[in-house]
Amino acid sequence: MKLKLHWQIFIAMGAGTAFALLFPEQVPYIAPLGVIFMRLLRMVIVPLIMTSIISGVAGIGDSRSLGRLGGKTFAYYATTSMLAILIGLSVTNLIQPGAGVEIAQEQRIHPDDLEKPGSVSDILLRIIPLNPIGAAAEGDVLSIIFFSIIFGFAITRLPDKHSKTLQNFFNAAFSAMMTLTTSLIKLAPLGVLGLIANAVAGMGFDLFAAVGKYMLTITIGLSIHFLIVLPAMFYLFTKRNPLVHYRALASVMVFAFSSSSSAATLPLTMKTMENNVGVSNKVSSFVLPMGATVNMDGTALYEMAGVLFIAQALGIDLTLTQQIIMAVTALLASVGAAAVPSAGLVMIFIVLEAVNITTPAAYAMVGVMLGVDRPLDMFRTVVNVTSDSIGAAIIAQSEGEQLTYKSTAK
Image (cartoon, rainbow, N blue to C red; front, side):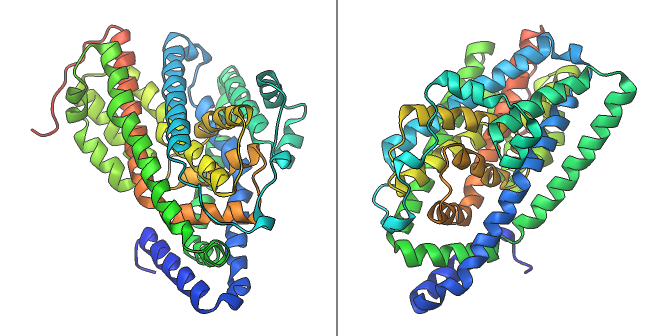
């Protein structure tokens, strides 16, 4: 129990595999561990999303702050997140990491069972809930996210007395949900034990080859975004060499990689952007905390690629419309992804449920992904934090600030 969580999960993967091979007839006795763990994670999705988004949007403060500076910030974050999602979609369709996994016919999903709105306009209409409470009860996550965003904005328009009261309430509720989610993640080794045993019993060793391709797919996608897209965005708007920015943020990237938490890295990011880059406190205190809450490029890419991987493994040929639903959902879900380790794994259920991929086999695949999530989580946190910092630099320069880069190597 003194081992780091990711080592506990690796041990659980090995134990689950060995159990399935040595005692295949006994697998049904430990499989419920995985089912219970997945139900616990699904249990926290709705309250976690609502409290996270409402507290983040309401924390902006005076609604007038959502003017020029807010517009630039949200435009940047929406652009980079959507680019990350498109990279995830393209790379996963190209590599096909889930192809070739043998899954029992009864665990597969028939295409007719998937969620299939008729057009893009139907997707947009579906986002607006007729009854927010009903949407929460039914787990209609797109509607929950939409309502949370506009409700959080409404809080910023209230008189200070009422605004502060509601902000304090949702901040406290969000902290409580974070504590609960973090506690549930600690149960991951037990969940993985049951999920892996069940997956190996039902899918065999083809699964592990697919997981290797899945890790490669995510790594390639994150690398493209980190090494090509974000530097190109930086150069396009600042006309500076991106290496200057990456050198200045070196210590931040290392800390983000080791902590796997955008929130834990935030104080160091703000300090470094002000001291080493020359971004004013006015810009950094607005753009960076908002980025740690709503800008999750790496998480959005991971959600898109992860769900496509599961669909491929289940033999599902998703249509363009269904992939559009997934892209929109991944973008909105990344807004609600709490800035803590492995929170993106919780959020992947959102995208799965958006297209109704909810079979035991799909959840078994999520359990397998959890087993190899730690190194991927570390890399995508670096991508998230780097995107935040580049956004702050771009916005600061657009506001007329003079950027003065200093290397952290000194």
